[in-house]
Image 1: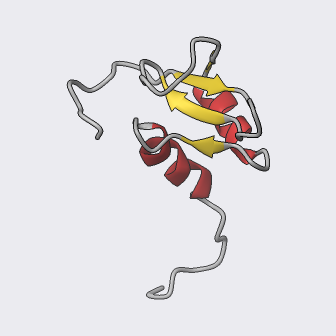
Image 2: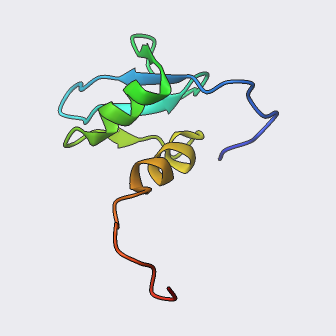
Length: 83
């Protein structure tokens, strides 16, 4: 279960690479589900990593909640149904 203790002053991400057939995963810095070997990323690098097939965003930390909406923004270039 996710708990929020404070709002971060900056976003920092970790990329946990593919291991034992599992896909790569982007985590928020400090996520306890990230492996010790995870590599630090900036926000743009994290978004680029998520664009790669098979890479997922962790749902136990803020990664999925924060990064997936950013990735989805602008995908639909047409007007909204109410426009």
